[in-house]
Image 1 (cartoon, rainbow, N blue to C red):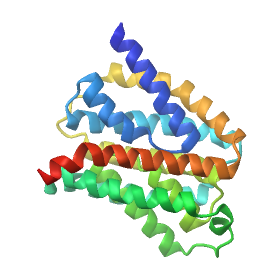
Image 2: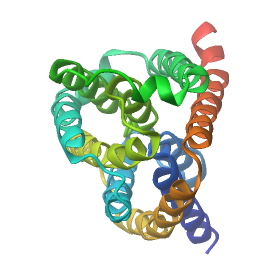
Image 3: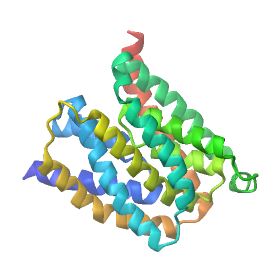
Image 4: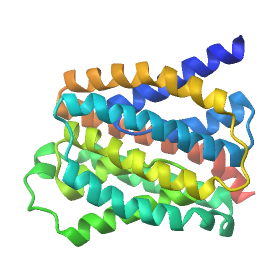
Length: 252
């Protein structure tokens, strides 16, 4: 019973983050599955992609009714990421996991700082992004998705705001399409030789439906500038915890 309550609570929280901020689900799901549920890291990565992918797809439906989606950007950005995510799924075996996570945290610090100090007007007044730039950004996020097993929403949203020029609310809704696409590709790439707990996945997804709906409604009510700052702080906090957990291991 305790495990069921824990799974429901975690599923709701992950769904709420995806719905409100368009990211953060998988970077929390993997450690939660390992440290709280007791899965192996390999199983947790694959399970995380299934959970986050399903919740993101449901979040797309909620944001579509609110008009906060850009399908053209989502399909181009997500299509590039999906291909690279699938092809790069096996690359994680070539690098020490601790080194990858530390480098990942450093990237998150840079992204969070840029989101925090950059005014929204600067992001939206730029020229239309080129097709090459859009595809390259999507491919870069897809690479991280395949290697680290994360949906990449905390990188997708800043990329859509700062590189593509979408308003923050639209970037959050659009990112859920991309996360769902990348998660499917990464899931297929990691599926070989992994036994999944379908019951656990069902509980997380079911609880995540309510969380995603609540998060999407909250995102609509928040002002754009406040939402952008909230997202930036969220990314910085995640980066800090990743560094605290992994940097001592890398130095030792």
